[in-house]
Amino acid sequence: MSAWRVGMLVLVLATACAQSPAARSATPRTATGDTAGTAIAGDVTVFAAASLTDAFERIGQVFEARHPDATVRFNFAGSQRLAAQIVEGAPADVFASADARQMEAVEAANAPVTFAGNVLQIVVEPGNPRDVTELGDLGDRDITVVLAADEVPAGRYARQALDAAGVTVAPVSLETDVRAVLSKVALGEADAGIVYASDVAAAGDAVTGIAIARDHNPAAAYPAAVLEGAPNPAGGQAFLDLLTSPEGQRVLRDAGFSTP
Image (tube, rainbow, N blue to C red):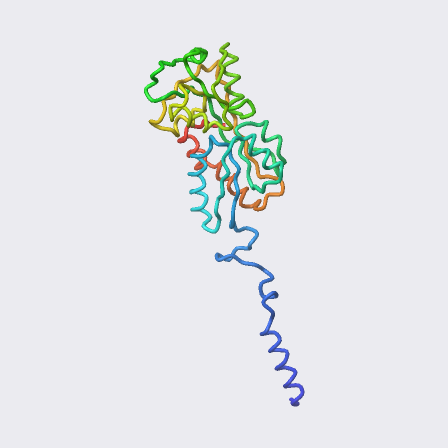
């Protein structure tokens, strides 16, 4: 073989061995060898109704244990406030609302899934010192009542319950989410309020819950969806899948929610 041919063969072999990093990474991989498109990683941002706080924090822990390369970032507030933030352009992957009305205000990438239900309870200070037994007692002017504002799902449900019972209440304050109502009563700033059964369960010994008659108690339904334009749609869908799985449903039931 001539010296010229030997030189060309060496040049070809050297070029093949010196393939650019960009070319070598044309098929991205994860640490486990899967393609990047199937990996769940990065931040997963979930906007969720305030009443979901405790349950979702536990579900978030399960999610991160399953997907160690992912981190769940929660934004808890009244559903109406979260919907407004999303409409104004706040980046989020999942929206979990306490009612369908607020879900309809945002643009979802897929059909919302109803993942939980809830009912209302009257909440009072521990031991029920004012001896509240039913919605009618909240009409007593000597009892200070706090409610969520009418635009908050919990506030609208509370008004429906009071109207069904024929009770007129003048609340001392209207709060921006249901957890604020719970806090006011727990701190002794109001004698009573109306919250979800799950909120009473989350508060433990800090409050006492009083059941509301079924015919006066509107059933709350919680829908969730991955949002159009989600920064991490794969992560959002994985969270939604966990939420509707037997494990996610068990966490929700333990937190006081009912099945959808």
